[in-house]
Length: 155
Image 1 (tube, rainbow, N blue to C red):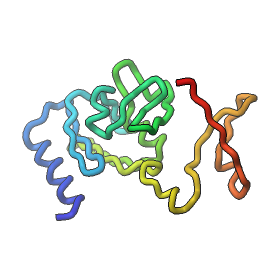
Image 2 (cartoon, one colour):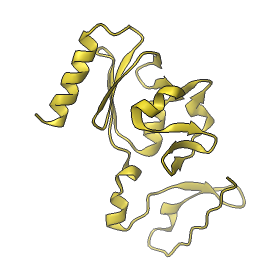
Image 3 (cartoon, helix red, strand yellow):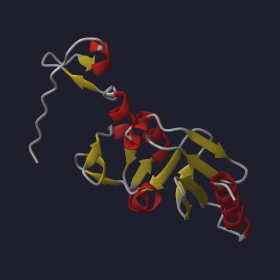
Image 4 (spheres, rainbow, N blue to C red):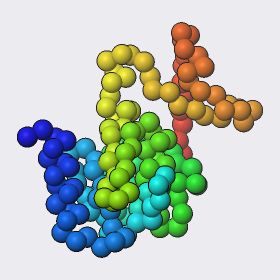
């Protein structure tokens, strides 16, 4: 049985068991997670921050959404009290998202930076930071040039 057949079968079984109307099934990697309390529409899926580790091993910290020693800065529009915009975070990280509103299933692909493909290609993933004047600068602006990236964190 291939992964897609297994995951879709497991999602269907979860839905058929009579999950509450406010719940959704989230497919991430090899996981099938039923999330009871969500806020969703056709575009976005908001989950409680406390459910995030069960879904994709990330947790919201002051420095961003963190998984092990990787932290991805998140903007305020991805947070709303106890809620976290999971689909908005996926768009920010370049992750594929597919949803079926009728079946109440959301499927998330792999986060490209987590895949590590940039190690094989020797091309760093693109990111954006403000320069000293406050203008946003993208690493991709310097493609073909040698770049020294110096970072610092207070924690």
